[in-house]
Image (cartoon, rainbow, N blue to C red):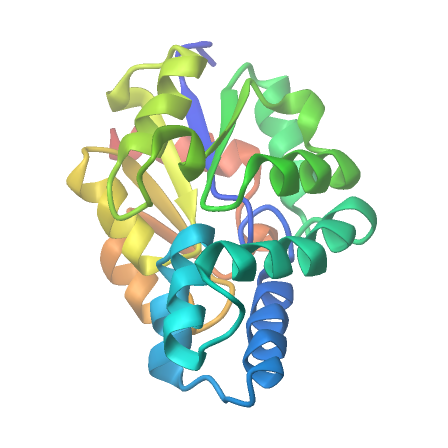
Length: 225
């Protein structure tokens, strides 16, 4: 396989089984403020950067002194988890290793901050296989815009036509599609997007990495290209 092919992975809910942790942290912060998050709130939070989430929770519940104070609360709750408990989604590491063996360049583009990403990806064993790890904080734009994917692709040095994005969130898949990327939707939970949503948006949709080997994925990319 030519080295010019690249894959950009989302982190939480795609490579790492951490989405439940984010939901738990959001619920805990709401409880601290004496509130309860509605489905509309959790759907909104899924699309926000951490600074945006801090501002949202502060404005919604009056939590903390201001948005940055809420961000510090999030950091306190999250960092220890990534350093000591973050683990792969079943089959994700084997999939990444299979792509590496076939010469595919790989990177991560995530809404999480670099400190979380570096700690979690290292703990789960992914870092040796990645050419780049990019946070939305590095580009100053959320995944509602394609900047984070473009930065990851530039660091890999792969052309747009040969670069695929893996995401569990339907809104991020829509961003990828609008920017000209092929994509794989990896279902995690309905908060990120139902399986039907992923099927309607991505070129390939799977419920987990047990449904897609590295060899099968590369064969499918040749057929779809």
